[in-house]
Length: 466
Image 1 (spheres, rainbow, N blue to C red):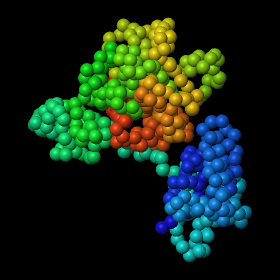
Image 2: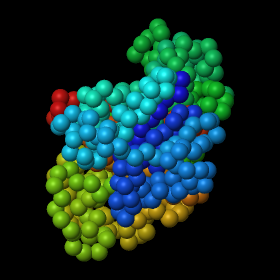
Image 3: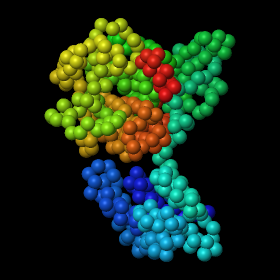
Image 4: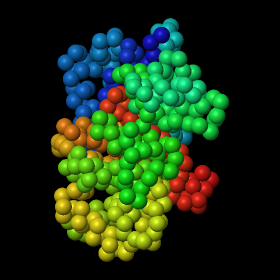
């Protein structure tokens, strides 16, 4: 049964191509939405770009006919029309909703469409699609079906972990170590394995006996980890199985995209930077380590920052400086593994030492800091690129960043979906989790969800309890 979907402005600003995602159903766009799109089109940020793209898409549809009468939308038989809000319907809203603001006008259009369907004798449901929680509540109060726009949402509880555990016998575990590896057909797999997924084999007779492997989709076999066990990264070494799997992906030049998801203190950023420095400075696989992160505050903004671009980026890049100082031996504290270094680096080295390490790397051309705001239009070849705090990016911003990757570049995105400071995304709709699901199973990509915090016992307790 075809449905009629009434779209709110925030849906189109979130995904300009939303009008193409409803297959053979009918789309209704209230004129109030067009007015709001017009007000946003001058915004220089992403919302302005999206507003202008929506306007262009609607203008292209005008070539098929009058939008007020409805035009064909796509090749599946769906239609789209722009509808005015009738004063009569607006007056029939409850007294509290008669102010005539934008949301109430959209509600009135949806109610009018519901009545038209009832008069015509059919019963296809009319659904108001909005990302505004309060508008969904008001729609429910006046008898409308209201839904969130979920096309690009990923249920965070079902996020692909990138790691699984499989029971095997001793002969099967021995077969992994010899060419061509262990075929997975005879194994009792919990679910279909994805390309480059980490698999821990556990001996049925001796459960304490385990072997870490990686699934190779091209041959359908499990192969032993080649790089992580042999890696020498100075003060850094993996402290749990997820970190071992992650380091193996980070050190493999054949894997061009790596995503690391995990709560605070699991070592995401530290592992990415350690692997990047090793491959840039020691192995010379890449020309430069490029680090970037969204410029989004935890609390209230401090205002405009003085100085050039490097000085302005200084406060935002301080966590990266802390991690680099720890990696480069900025203090005399003994090795603590890969649990993050914000606390230990702060104790270990002075601000002068941090700046010295930072400046030395930049002076040698091995390190570059890039503001995400200026990455559009660039092509980035032969670099190891780390995008930290990627959970604060929208799917559109993540697409923009990943499509900048040139020949020979590896890109690593790290983040914690439960610590989001961007008010326009959440744990289910941010660009990082969206990217994980989109690239799941691709031969060029790998993902690991890090589970165990290694920063300190207190940090791990806080991440779990708070």
